[in-house]
Length: 338
Ligand code: UD1
Figure: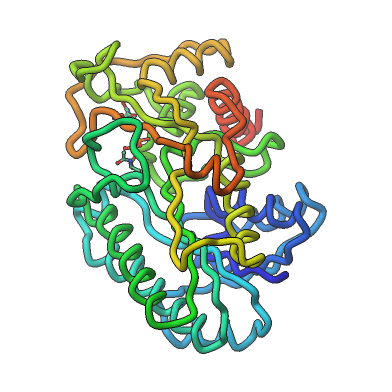
């Protein structure tokens, strides 16, 4: 089975390619390397023994996308990760986000139809729930108005896929990720943010290694047990494995609807201080952190109801917070040549 993985050199994409190849899938990666490195292709090869095919391609260009599909006949399915994901940047540069994230999806869907490719797994986000009224949040919870253009691209993309599936053969599984962190146990692949990252885990590891002076904890006056915001952190390898199950589900015709939606989280909420404590405990490194004002656009608390994914996909996240924080640290150390 041949799977096209867009954004396959990115953080979640690269871990998914590893899991696909471990299961015997043949992978073609399409990525424009705008936020990843070509070295990832070799490192996937070192982990799995198979170097995936790689195409440096901008999917927001129609002709380039057409050409890609023409050159790879016989694709069985697509996993679509390729997208910009920096929330703050999306507020400053909305058109960059709408054009890249939505045009590339539309180009892909058109080529899939032209070439008779039915199945797509799409990277969505728990950001579509905003601050949920009920926790844990399940897939039937209402979609809240997006707080950023980035979040809006995820909502609109879900709608585009759903609309197209009504009038074509398209089948989709939309995976709503909670907060993926951690890295592959080999420390050969991990999160490689270009520029200054703003997500919690890379900020923690960069502070610990000395690339930053402080970790700013955004807000200590939330209505939570320790006052810091709560998220559902999930190990990126657990997340990657869910993609393989989702693809197999559609390829084997086990999906029950044209478009299915699953939350991917652990079902456990941890505060920012919980993550810091786990990091300090597992790595024995003390973090320099200080409390600051809340970050604009942050929700107070969100964690997943994972019942549907557990039951229907037969998938459950296996790794705990300590494994996540330790693997993230091992990756940061490897990057630093330690
Ligand atoms: C958000 C979205 C997620 C999206 C991601 C992309 C929600 C609930 N989640 O994740 O869907 O994919 O952006 O970037 O909308 N924090 C600090 N100090 C830091 C960095 C973070 O205290 O330097 C705190 C944040 O305030 C937050 C938690 O750590 O409470 C996690 O933050 P982050 O890793 O940025 O992810 P989200 O904002 O939850």
